[in-house]
Amino acid sequence: MEDNGVCPDAETDAMVLNIFGRHGFPTKKLRRMTYWMPKFKNLSPWALPEKIPTSNLEVAKLAVQRMGSVDPATEMEIFQTSELRDAIDDTWIVSGQSATQRELLAKLQEKKTVFVEGAFPIWLRRTSINYFILRSDPEPLSEEDQKQRAQFDYDDVSQLRSWILGQENLTRKDIIIEPSVHEQEDGTILAVAVTGTCSKDSLLSWIRFLEKKNPNLANLSILFATNSPLGEVIPAIESSVPVNTVKKITDTSDL
Image 1: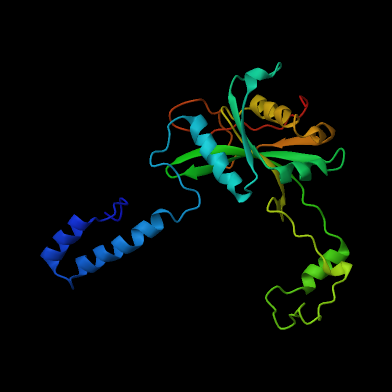
Image 2: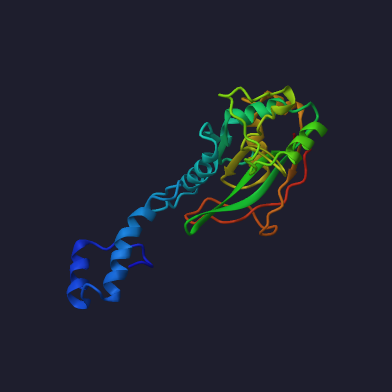
């Protein structure tokens, strides 16, 4: 029952109690399962339906929704490449981007390089699907910020001061803007997407759709570095079982 996620009910408890007694090991095991399994059932913040859909589009929606949950303001959009005039692939694109990510993208300097990276697999129980990210290099910190962050110990509470007693003397150097959840040490995540074919043309279409709400993308240099950790294989096709496939893309002449 535990291996298959079946929670015991009152009838099972009565059967085990009559067979093994109140102090028997099976009874104690069953009561522990009755107590803990309902708690663990809803413990995950990324709850999934009881049955994972077989459609790649529905799986992509679940994947983007899960990845975007780190920022409650993340908006999920579904695009059809057939809406673009020059698109070759007729497929769908599930894109996720928040208002904070749009602000970070708008602040990038002209001609700065951003990267389309992937495909990276994400697992939803026993089903996996590939996703891509739009990433920029991390912004370097100033020397003053580096010194302050190196000297400040968040675990040291010996020097805490109470503002109630008037002992807090803040200066401009004491204020450090905390980076958003999208700004990581290895780069800033600007958007995430899952495409129906994982092909070069579908990624180009994704960038064109993003330009509608992110006009600064037209001023940036976009580099496709889609090296799959699973190797260079054929593009994915729409099927009942998601396939981990991708082509290596390095050409940026179409942008």
